[in-house]
Amino acid sequence: KSKQNGKNRFHFYAREMQSDALKRMQIEADLRAALAQSEFTLEYQPIVAADSGELFGAEALIRWLHPERGAVAPADFVPVAEDSGLIVPIGTWVLREAVRQMHEWNQRGHVLPHLAVNVSGVQFRDPALPALIADVLDDHAVASGALTLEICESVMVDANSATEMRMRALKELGVDYSLDDFGTGFSSLSYLKRFPVDIVKIDRSFVRDCPDDRSDAHLVEAIINMAHSLDLKVVAEGVETQAQADFLRELECDYLQGYLISRPLRAEAFEALLAPGRGFRGELAMAG
Ligand code: C2E
Ligand code: MG
Ligand code: MG
Ligand code: MG
Image (cartoon, rainbow, N blue to C red; front, side, top):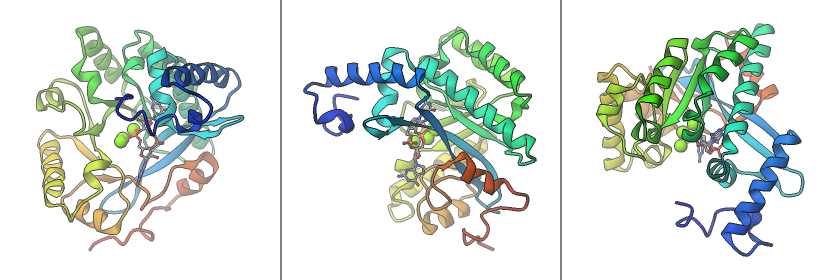
């Protein structure tokens, strides 16, 4: 994958450095420093009910402010973090920070019902993950039902029985699973039946050309119907236009996420959305 995208990847690092390998090494070294020097933050992107505009939850998204290079996009460093194994300590930080933030909001009476955290496949295969999650939830007295782990299909495709057991153990702890970027990997109905998934997130590449592109529109419709027949909820990612939102609502997609509703926000800005009665009804022209 990195070879294919080699031209536009690591563009923050592209100018001075000759080879991809050199860039990767530099990013890796910088990521180690970033962990030590707390250069990461999280942003929170709202996820709303498609029918009412009510806030359902949020997705936590990592941000890296490099002291010299400025903001580096996750697409430019998450793959390097995965290859080097650094995604494990970075992912630990993300989980702790996300749950800490949820606890802080709770304490101020601003309850966020669901917070989704991206968990890389590498991190998911770490046997220490269940203990970490139990510990983090316990530290902050946050109900496990409020935490959703966003995993991608590869976690289930590569699953050995240990991974499957880990997934079930965490499920028993009360966390939910959301299947990220659905449709881009080796999606299979049998995985959806075999693993305890709760939510399917339709990848934004399928949402982008809806409703005009008939084949994408049909694909999105098929995913929603299939998910519902398996008793799963559906989030559409990358909703940018009112026409997309209307189309998705018509198909009874459960939740919407995307720039139409809101860009990812810093914690302080997000907190304003948690005030009682605050929904997105006004912003989204809700049907009916
Ligand atoms: P993702 O999990 O699929 O996250 C959704 C991405 O789509 C985010 O990009 C978000 O900012 C972007 N997005 C949301 N709405 C729209 C929209 O309407 N239009 C467009 N064009 N984009 C939209 P971001 O923050 O750059 O993250 C990219 C990817 O990096 C994520 O994709 C996820 O795979 C990974 N990532 C982000 N944070 C973390 C993290 O904490 N841990 C791990 N392991 N991966 C992360
Ligand atoms: Mg995600
Ligand atoms: Mg996604
Ligand atoms: Mg995606």
